Image (cartoon, rainbow, N blue to C red; front, side, top):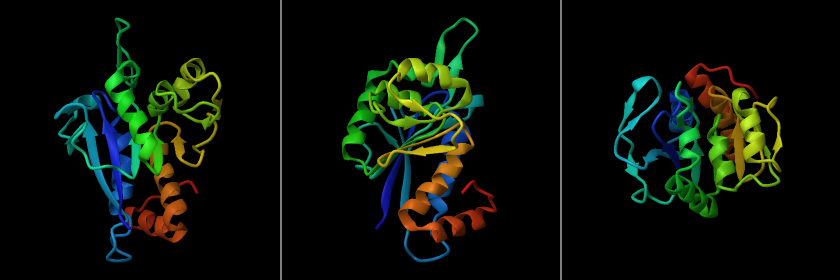
Amino acid sequence: MTRKLAILLFDEVEVLDFAGPFEVFSVCGLRSSNAKPFEVFTVAEKPSIRARNHLMINPTYVLGQEPLPDMVLIPGGGGYHADGQPFGTRKEMDNPVLLNWIRNQHQTAEMVLSVCTGSLLLAKADLLHGLKATTHKGAVEMMRSVAPDTVLMPQERWVDNGKIVLSAGISAGIDMSFYVISRLLGKEAADETASYMQYDYWS
């Protein structure tokens, strides 16, 4: 079985938030068998995205044109400009197109993953009520205000609610990805992927 994993992109997305998990899931299983456990693609509201530090990305699909994913990953990234204007996730929290897309994917997907402040988008999409969550250490207080009935666990590298799995800041998304592979395919698959990547992950 090959699971389709859609990674959402938006302007000022943190590069490692999406690129780390993209690499982990993309290379999983390539050396241990002929099977391909994950088909990874990116999706965005428009055909060109400007990530953090001016990295330009052409997503695989524009919203509404992507195949139905089995899994969805929501990365983070962003903050506020000197003039107080929000960017990245802080801006997209008020984007009804992205929030509706996330809600719709949650209804049909096997798993929804978030990295860093991607948790803010899940919270604004009303998907974290009564659940446990973690996020970037710099966004904990904002998470408390956006999701007051969510149990925040900022000390945790990742938090597993079953369908929704969230990770802490930036690099934590890589470790969460290995955890998800271990949960779905077994620890041997995660270990093999980490060995190929020469990555010492939190387990």
